[in-house]
Amino acid sequence: MTAIGDLTSLLMLRGLSADEVRKALDLVQLHVKESTDIRWTSGGHPVDSVAERRRAYDRGRQRIRRDKLKNAHIDNTLTSLPSSDSSLEKKEGVGVARESKPRANRGQVVPADMQISIKNLDFAMSHGWPRDRAFREWERFRDGSISKGRVYKNFDAGWRNWVTSPYQKDAPGKFNLMSGIDGVI
Image (cartoon, rainbow, N blue to C red; front, side, top):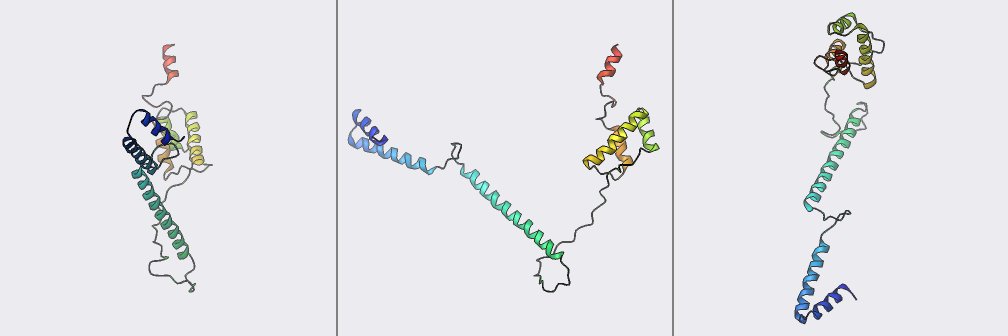
């Protein structure tokens, strides 16, 4: 027997009239129709129509953005072709790239063979670093610049920032556990 048949038999056994059973079955069928109109996600949750419309809008916006980027790439390719090629006709505004500003000097990586200068060594020592630590830290500064691609417009300024950084191990005001233990012993 089907679920509807079971429900009909149960209602008839409870003493409901045939008219009342028909009304109850109409309500059940209406509820079933409404529940099948709701879309469900794969996780068993009803689909939020507002969120779905927002995602559709975002997909369309991203598609337009990608198309613009693709067209800009094609336009830049067209302008990079030799101008003496007359077989290529350009429409007004199409294939014309904007003039880019010349890039400012972004600096450069510390050269691998660069050694610490006397001025930089004096600066580190004036901040309480022993000579051997200054040489070790200079190697870390130089190697960090090379390995991570850090660029500096002014190596001396970069070194001064390195020395005075609050992240240094023995920075002023920072508690050093070993020196604290030595003070107790």
